Image 1 (cartoon, rainbow, N blue to C red):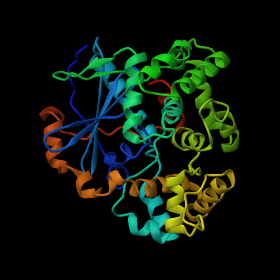
Image 2 (spheres, rainbow, N blue to C red):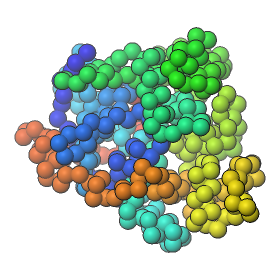
Image 3 (cartoon, rainbow, N blue to C red):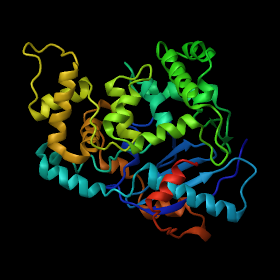
Length: 378
């Protein structure tokens, strides 16, 4: 299904508050696709009923939603574009002043202070918990590139196509619901796609959710009961939510903590693996093995690293950790704001907004209750 493309709309937002080049490539979400243009990059994510497209200049976030046919009327499109803006506010947690957090962490931590100017704009996403759960089950003994390929293959196999862009061959698929992955045949199919032992973990986790919470989507929204239950984990304590996540097959402490941080609002949680342990030893004086050999990640060591980094960074320790984690990735060795900025603001405005729409669209920020509704209905 090939569709027509609307013009981009604009939202004033500095790179200090959000850097798409960093946030969407640092191992939080694995389903964003990139499209390279002459002198900038477009980022796309397929939701249940639309594809969200983003570009960025040093001072502005440009966004548009592309819908499958039949195309919405002008009135319907305006309402749905307003939904997209609410979704962006929720997904990127734009109500949180990242620059202020960077300043706070720099005062508390001289190591962070040395890195903050180069690695600006790295914030934690507020993802769909079901997609986040499956994605991080895939992350076990894996790397960002391979996880990305696996997640896209899963969507293509188990979710019908939504749309195709004009002049392009890529078809966009939403993320499949739990019921689509719960059947016993899913394990074998995912194994054939290269998921290995993770195939059974995904299928059994989906089956646990469907058996416990049912598979029929509620009539007033597009979420299955299991998806709504997972979202409800945002409203309980960190320890309670972690206990629920650890019941799923293929979810250990580190995977559970990634989900807590990246989709369940537990901002203080620092997911710990050998990479984070090395950061704690390198910068924060945590002792390693006396003979220099690799250290096994025991529960006690996990807690020691977590406690150490929480004491350094405080309430938003999980957010601060993501900056240090990203800065230490080999793929970010040459990362800098000059590369992330791309075109000047004026150049992008001229290219993205058709003449009759060269304006800044101002829509009041939604309140918390509106954000919650929007995030569960798109």
